[in-house]
Amino acid sequence: MKYDLVVVGGGIVGLATAFRFQARHAGFRVLLLEKENAVARHQSGHNSGVIHAGVYYAPGSLKARLCRTGARMIKDFCRENAIGFEERGKLIVATDEVECQRLHGLRERATANGIPFTEVPGEQLKAREPLIRGVEALFFPETAIVDYAAVAHRMAERFVAAGGEIQLGVCVDGIRETANGVTITSGAKTYEADRLVACAGAQSDRLARLAGLKTNFRIVPFRGEYYEVDPRLRSKINHLIYPVPDPDLPFLGIHLTHEVGDRLSVGPNAVLGFAREDLRRFSVNMRDCLDILTYGGFWRFLRGNLGSGLSEFRNSLFTSVYLRACRKYMPSLERRDLGRRKAGVRAQVIMDDGSVMHDFLVMRTGRMVHICNAPSPAATSSLAIAEHILENYLTDR
Image (cartoon, rainbow, N blue to C red; front, side, top):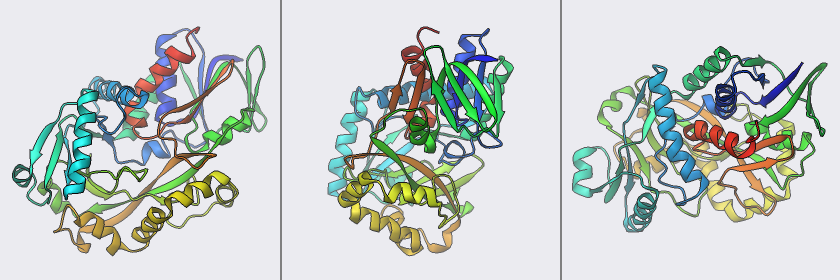
């Protein structure tokens, strides 16, 4: 049996791609392969659940455009499918003069991206959020929270209902492209496809090389560790609270996030991980370790980020250090307020020169499309990413 399209990867981007393709091409045979025993088992099911407004991204960039469009599409999808989401809004809080200057830059970026926001002086901030300390802030009312695992599972249901097929527990170990199609193997199983789209997340570089593509990057995992905050504080925090990001660091910093299910969390940090997919603390995968330690791009990255890397390790090992970062904008937070620790893993693309790839990275051949980097806000942007793939890489289908 030959499929018109095989999608490898059952995260939210792969599911959105399969779902939207099947919706456009009702008579086509579309197959999604996932190596786990359920969809959305990794990054898609272990994130902060934020529907981002898109304030951080360079105006006119693909990331900015897909985030804005994707946020609208995700909210519409939730409404159509009775999936609850909350438009809590986000406050980005500046705590000193340096951060105020950076906040002004974000204001200009938000204006250029067409994102609604309100300026919040210090006295208004205190009225809005009595427990939060800051000099000034920007408020983004469109920022929302949702359960992305629920969204992903509903996409899977809609895809199958439209005629698509999902096979779980299929670990792809071979990809061969010819002039007439693509052959995918998993052990003794063989699948034939007219086209292949790979959305393999933390395994995207390996899958690209498996397919014969030459890559100039590698996936390096970073653990994002969260604490659940004492439930009594949820009603006292009205919005999502974010610090002003440091432009010299690749991540956004530790923030307070409301989550669906009446939960409040604080995090994440961004500590180097030694396993691409194992969420347990101190977990080590020898293959993943060797990939990191033998990669020159990682050592070049480390030279430029050693100080911040050591800082992240400290706040991972010592809760008191983690707490100090939170107290910068919420001084009343105590150690007893921090409950169970949880984590996700961010699949970060590091280039051969040691630079961090912040935007989407796509590799294309005659019959294959490999989504090699889909960083945050990939979940927010998932349906827009799917439409972008269909319109720009599968136009003749």
